Structures are given as structure tokens and as C-alpha cells.
Length: 177
Ligand SMILES: [Zn+2]
Ligand SMILES: [Zn+2]
Image (tube, rainbow, N blue to C red; front, side, top):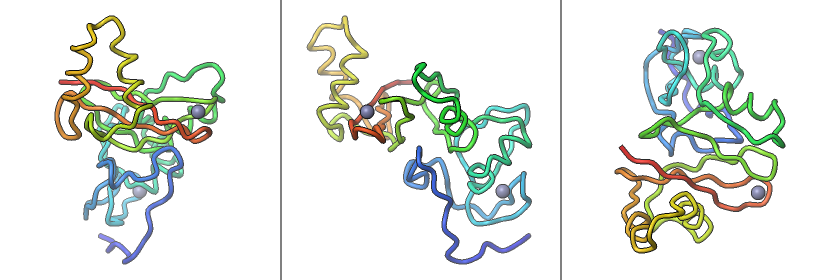
């Protein structure tokens, strides 16, 4: 086993800037199934492929894990104004994230948004709260208020927070067990 070099920096992911914070990457002394190295970190989010494998964030970033295992890390349905290369980068070269239901990526201004992690209701700004309320359109107002207040970072229901890389607006959706 190759020891993890000290101080090695994680690759940067423009659509998922802090994967250690969101829990999609974690410290581990296990070897990567793609490069065979134990580099100190492993990807912990979903992997959609025939085999369930553990890969390192570097093999996610350079696309080699996606290619070797014919894998995607996110199932994204992008609006028509988003270039295919962006969808490819999000699905095949960006850490996905675990959700209660199947995770989905959010898009805005013709680009993928950056994923910031799970949040509780009181941690969402006005724009993000509005996005959640829009999802629940048709519910009575008091039930919507109750639901938004009940959102919790570690529990259910929870909110998945994104930020548009173009205009900076916060975007969010929620799900539950
Ligand atoms: Zn690797
Ligand atoms: Zn935007």
C-alpha cells in the first residue's frame, strides 16, 4: 500500500467545491479501485455502475473512474440551455452526493449550480426558502411553514443547497425518507 503523501491537496471541483464538508469525500486509508493508491481520501457519494467500487477523488476529477467503471456519480436532467460538456462534467467528473431519495443536480443561468451541502430550514436564505416553497405549491400556507421549519441538516426532511455560479442566487430542493 502506498502511503498517503502528507499535505496533498484535494482536486478542485467547480460544481462541488467542498466535498469534504458535504461528506461526499472522506478521509480513508483504503486504496482506490481505479489507481490502486491509498491517497488518504475516498469518494463516499453514490456511484452508478455495474460494480460498487471505492475510488479516490483524483480519479473522479480526471474522469478515469467514470471511464474505467462506466460510471456516473449523479443522474442529472439539465435544461436545454446547458451545454452537454457541463452535464458530462457534473455526472462523470464531479462527486455526487447522498440524498434520501435519488439526488438531483440543480441548474441556473445555463450552467450547473455548485452544490453546497445539506441545510436546515433556519440555515436557508430567502431565495432558497422561496425555492423550497415553490416545490410545495398547492399545499396550505401553514403546512408549508411547518415543513420549511422542520427541514434539518442531518435529518428528514432536509434541504439540498446550491448556488448559481453565474448570478449567485441560492437554489434548493428538499426530500425526506
Ligand atoms: Zn484513484
Ligand atoms: Zn443564475
